[in-house]
Image 1 (cartoon, one colour):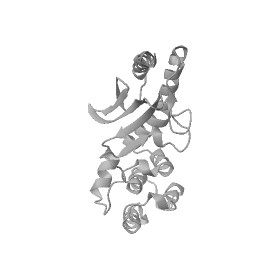
Image 2: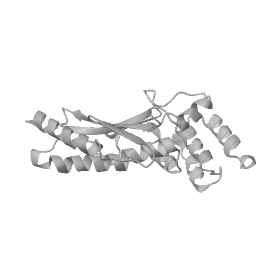
Image 3: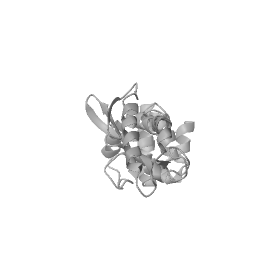
Length: 209
């Protein structure tokens, strides 16, 4: 029975995915996935995955490449990416510390009974847009909100401090701006504090404004 429900849910989910739009990215829906493109280049994807043990779905986001990632690599940091894969941003609802995608801690939305499939699909889509597509857009576009996203979940980013530095430079934020002061006050964001601070001074220092 649950397999039939899953099939029905995933058919409806694909219909819902095809309706999601972005002002900034080209989106391509396929089974349980939403590809993120600019000028036909795939930059990442948002997805849901079924977990049999939990009898439910979790969500994830991968951004493989973007301007911020190129910036980070070009700085030749003396430390490795925080991520276990080659992405720039890697987010899974399974590691949520607060309820975002999931109906409960652990980031799972349970497989619904047949009469709740449509409501569940709508809920999944709404949460993907709110918690995943928005973060993908901030990341790919390098908006000021990228800094807030990094501060909230630094371990989802390959180079959190450098990514925040990129967003600050792109949006003309100074070293002593309120937003960047938060970055400097967040110990968990640094890769190598000496290197990171020297680079921030070089790029955002008053002489460069």
